[in-house]
Image (cartoon, rainbow, N blue to C red; front, side, top):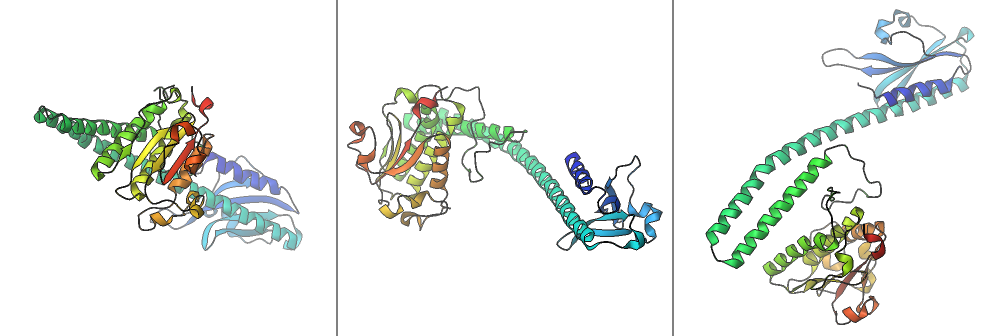
Length: 378
C-alpha cells in the first residue's frame, strides 16, 4: 500500500500522543499486506520512540518470534478484517499489566484502525476518480468525430435546400446546438484538470457544466438566448403557444459577474419543468421585469397547499405524479437562487413588483426569480 505522507505523520502523532505512559517503552504499528501468490505479512510503518533504523516486517525480526511477558499485540481491526497490529513493549515487572493501561491501548488500537480504514477508502476513491477521468477522456475523444460529422452533414444539407429559408433556419440551429455541445465537451476536458471545488454548491447540482471560460464576457441576454431558442423549437414541435421577451432591460445587457451564470441553470430548470408538466395545449413563457425574471405556464394550477411544498427536496406535486422525475428540480433552483442572493417563489399576479408591466399576465402558475440587480454586474 502506497501510504500518503499525511497518513504516516498522523500515525506517528497518534503513537507520540500516548507517550511513555504507565511503563510503556515502545509502540510499533504494522500494516497487513499480501501480494498475489505470497503469504500475508505485516510491514512496520511507524514507531515510538522513533529511531534511525530501517522499518522491518515482523517476519524479518527474529526477536519477535520469542514470547515475552512485557510484550502484547493489539489487532487493528475493521469489522472482520484484520488491517494490522500494534506491538506494545513495557518495563513492567512480571508482565503485570494494569487494566487501565490495557483499556487505553485497546482504545488506541481502535483509533489507529479507523485511520487505516479511512486511508484505504481514500486510496480506493482516488483510483476510482482516476479511472473515471480516463474514461471521460476516452468518451470525449470518441465523440469529437461524430460531432464534426454532424456539422459537415448539416452544411451539405443547407447547400441542397437551396432557397428553402425556413428549412435552412432549422438546420442552422442544429449547427448552433452542435457548437454548444462542443463547448460542453471542452468544459468536461477542463473538469478533468485539477480544480478547486466550490464548497457552496451541493451534491444535487446535476445541470449543465458551469461556464468555465472566465475571459468571455457574459450577459443575462446571451445566457438566456440559447435556452429561449430551444424552448421556441419545443413549443413549435408541440404546437403550443410560447412567449419570450420582446424588450431586454439594461440590466440584462450589461456584463455579468461570472458567479451569476447560475441564473441560466435556474431558468433552464424552471422552463424544463413547465414543458414537462404543463398540459400540451398550455402556453409557456418568460418575461423580464426591472428586478427579476418570470417563468409562467397556463397549465393546471398548483394548489395553495403545495405552494411551498414543491420546493422541498423529493416532493412531487399532484401535476407531476404521473410523470418521470426525482423531485429535486425546484429544490435545487431555489437553493441556487439563494446562493446568489436572490429568491425564487411561486406567486400570484398581484404579488409581483412591476405591476404596471405584468398586470395583464393572468396565468395559472408564475415562478418569480427575484435577483440582486445592483450586485450582478462586473
